[in-house]
Length: 189
Image 1 (tube, one colour):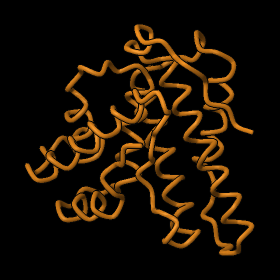
Image 2 (image 1 turned 120 degrees about the vertical axis):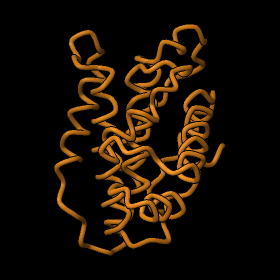
Image 3 (image 1 turned 180 degrees about the vertical axis):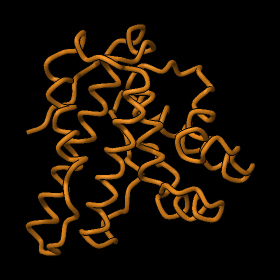
């Protein structure tokens, strides 16, 4: 499985250059654009990110390099036959609250990016429509305060659900996927 540039590195670099979103949200936007149907060859995504995340102020070269690495890793993961998407959110070493907040911001970013390429869901499958309704609910969630083992387990299940929905969106909406055979569809049990 391919690994994304990590959440802390990306978040720290965004903060270094006074960009007011974190690694989870920026990765969510990138995933949303790709899963919403932006072609893999489209390189306008960096301009879109500067518009929505930095008031159209160009990113510093160091940050562009990091974002390109994140984008390239994301494309590799989304096109992997193993369904290897790794979301750029706080890992399990972080508090449950931080992980939950990262998931909420990732989903909010995804919804933004997806909406840029899929303004209507009328032609989308019932599974995608239902999955994006789930995303809307997650995006409106309050922070998670409980740090117990049950909450951690529920959060891990929710993270996997979000990952599967994102992959399903990519498989259905991505023009490049129409040319690729799909071995199996991911399912949540």
